[in-house]
Length: 261
Picture (tube, rainbow, N blue to C red):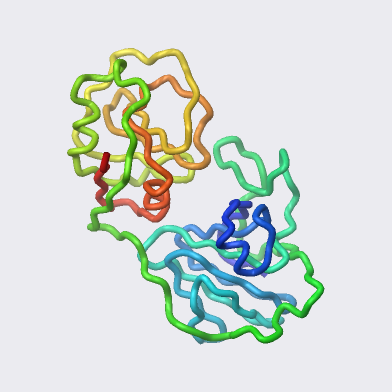
């Protein structure tokens, strides 16, 4: 039994899935803020990655290592010092595929629906007993990344077409200390701060990549995440690197961010 909203996703992350012996494209759970309570209907092996505090039967369990959750047992996952944690279960979560993926695309509305309290998810079975020889308690939580009031650095690449921007746009992007607004999700993170001069008219739509920093008419940047649109007409003032996007995945509203070019 899976309680409290979470999200099913097939993130191709070797580290998370290999912790429990899964293939790289096996579906995992992405937990936004939490807390999340998992109740096992049979013995399973789990691993939690990210800034989280995990408890099984009142005992804290280390992140980034597998642990057993016995039949009828409950695991409690609380995100600390960040925004997201990820849960892998040995055998994977067997939700239906859409276009060859088990991910939820929040912008397109494809894939499994976000979880709600009381949802029951099927888990794939393994040949060996999943709980054999695995710890049920361990070290404390991993360290979080950023909270309100912190300043995080986001590595960024220059804009692909600087000629469509004002002469000071790139420099202003990098020298400004931005604040993460409440408008942030897997589609994009909107930043608040002094407006960058934006072109008066939008250009013909062109392809957008994950990490693109779009400059809308408001002059306040919008950093696109994994569920970003495929095209857009507003100019791109920079592109956050994979490292930068990993940092942004853990920010909450009120965190201050600085782009480092």
